[in-house]
Image (cartoon, rainbow over all chains, first blue to last red; front, side):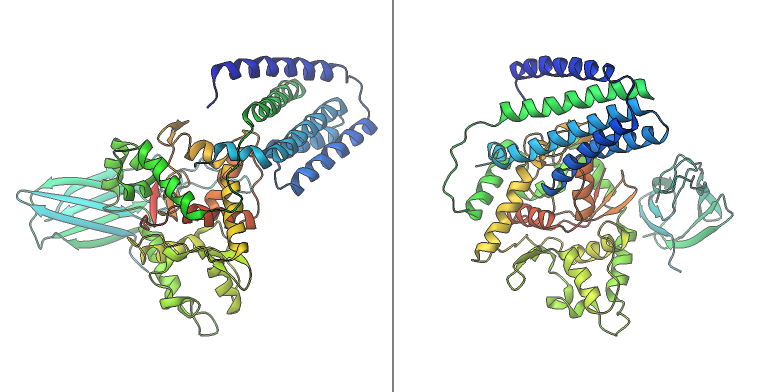
Length: 110
Length: 103
Length: 292
């Protein structure tokens, strides 16, 4: 649906962010329950905001569920990582809702 | 209770064309319900079409056939006004029969 | 499990970033036309877009969705229509529609012309309420007004009822009206905006599939054109192994692109149905339908 030039830019952007999250995840070794609670609360808040914009993603909910499950099992490293993933997804969905307020017109048939 | 078998049989020349739609859940036994439990297998095992005392079509089915199966076939013989008897039996021992007139 | 999460989270974040990038690259400065919506002009442009894109397809045939896009599928579908899979639901709907409520009244009392041959007029804009009323909504309101519990919008009963009502209108052209009321125009515009707005993690709008890619495949399915896409509703979908309403289709479409679905018959969905139906005015009701 997009040109190959744009696809190439997106590919490098995707690679960059993949490296970023991999780096962030490894820095988390040794997370505590308090870390999890903070990360989860932040993710939930962002997801709530997405809900008010009527634009939540199913993957955000899945990440939150995974975070909770990991925390219940005592694996706070995973729980924090999942919470951060959820927060990132929620924030992306908020960004999507906001920019689509005008961007949708580009697709309209005239 | 309404019949589970809908059938249309038309004769032209030497051939009779038969179409049938059968209402049946045809559960394979591999699908889970909303709670996560397996839905037990419940499917038609045998389907027969009988004309003039003979089976013109006989199907031995298993769990691979989908819900509400549709069948279409032709057979030699049969003329307008003849009876066509359709029966099915499923793995629970239940069944249904109907007789239709060839048009 | 944790190893998997790290990889997954990387992919998810990447797709989120992809979405962001796509958005920033996709949003072009766009000279918006006059502020007053012109639905009639929109409908004309909408129909022109599809008839020009598919010159071999007759206007009325667009209501057959993927079958109008693929000859082999069309042939198989024609054969199947001789003994269609929605027959059982249709019979059930006819029975349900005729059965009176506990208070002695029936659906016929809630609708013009006893509820027969009116499907092509829905959705309507209710000027008293100031909102769009879809057929599904009207049916449940009828039930509640007569002391009956409402049906789920996504399950078999509602599908059976709307199947019957669609059947009594088969062949009649869609005739959706937008009264000269700013709230109606706003509802129409909301529906249009919903249709073109990207949503879900996969960042698709309805238009992404049904305007930009009709006739193309998404996984194993052939995409239907947006023109006439509601005319065959409700549909027996082989994928569902059963009958489904417009509400079911809207909500499942949302979750398929990884967007959390809204409540059935939310304002957004009502307005979306209003818009999509209006731009297909003139095309015949073909419901109930069958789809892969």
